[in-house]
Amino acid sequence: MFNKYTDKRLQQARIYAAEIHRKLSIECFEPDFGFADHITEEYKRRYSEYHRNLAEEIERGEHDHNFTVRQRMHEYLTGECVPFLV
Image (cartoon, rainbow, N blue to C red; front, side):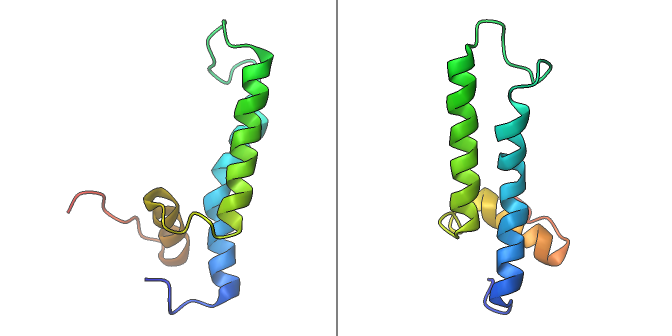
């Protein structure tokens, strides 16, 4: 599917796909993020760490097989959203 793109372009698509997880890793500490009141700071820290690590893995290409990651990469590369149900 991605064979026609250069390594640089694919890496840019991976960075785009990882962007949402980077944002989640930062924004989860905001008071209006949406966590319930009983969620602890320790849970938020683990949540943040998980999403930060996931973003790094996506950027390294370790999740290229994941449908959601491939969908976001495809959207970045082509401007089209892959239909989930055909």
